[in-house]
Image (cartoon, rainbow over all chains, first blue to last red; front, side, top):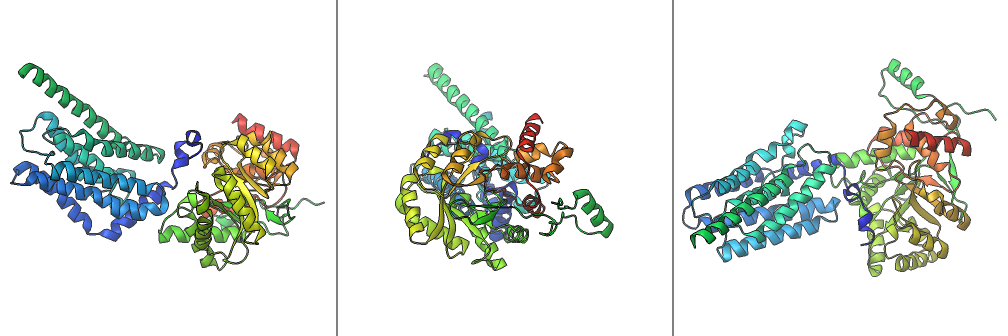
Length: 229
Length: 309
């Protein structure tokens, strides 16, 4: 496309702040009480990690993949696409992440939560819990009503942040699975920044935090490998 | 000639406060103040100097509350004498919003100067996109079709000129915004028999004064000025300062009128297309289509004043 280099961020935002948040409100009203199922799925993931019943690893991955499919089909391809021509591309990115989770996590069994958790991994769980229980409420101090709350497995921002936390908490960091959620957190941060949101920093801060901690984990493993043989 | 008397904002608000009515600056009647129109050079048809843009503000999705608000904005716009509405497939659901408003107001076949755009890099997809846009507008045909941001302009202009020949559109144009691609824009203006061009023009974005506006005048092309308020950044900025007392020389009662009158008083400019999501603002905007326009000396003074803020 011509002249993309000459565009400012505001040129790429096709809607007002009011319209943006009204989309959440109308979507939440339309799918209620599915939000309760989404919350239950998030709590189930925490319970599965805590008690580790047989097959819990695959169950976690299936729930997480479903969580990525939710915003794709329920939001990007339908509602958001009506006001933003880029939305289908976002939707496909979420589908790709869901597919990668199914492939790497469920089919190949490479996303597991079996071993004892270090402090960094527990920090990942804290981030997951934040995205599940606190992030939906961040709009309240700014006067946004609860009906506009963004939830894990329903809306993209908390889904991406929660996933980053979960990936950090896994037995091994799967870098391929970090790409889409990190990119989304950057997009979300820029969108919220352009809309003068007080919490614009949350998604990119989560991404940066997970990246730093994941690198720290990788370097710690490497050091152990060199010293321990 | 007796100067037509426009009610001042202070007098009106005082009267409304006394009457306990909702604050709303009334529009002057045609008897009180001249309603300003300018001719499209290629045909002589006259259109009001203030139109309605729909970038961002009309992209409201399927929100029934917002759709009704946009329909009210359109109603006030039409009641104020406005006719030209500008949109594009790039503007999300704005075309659907326009169609909703036109159907609600019973104006799908009258009283609207419909200006839309073709926006696809696929020339072959152009006619289908135009038809889809027309259905969204619920109009029988467009008055003006423009190649949006010069995208695939060679092929699309060929399509649009063929449509004009066949009577399927009345005018053909091209657009750009925010100072982009001006060299190529000039090239197209010099070589194509366009009826309209659309460019960004306001007291702080004046690059087009150097070559594009003079060329439009020489070539007999109407000019639509977009981004008159720089996405609201300009109007938000100037409204932090008091309106200069001499703004009355241009019958400008407030900053929107000040900015719009500056823009549409350029000899080459036909109309400006401010966009808004608020009824009060559309009324303020259409008021700029009434009364006098500033002369050249006042125009220079207006631009200098805004730049000095």
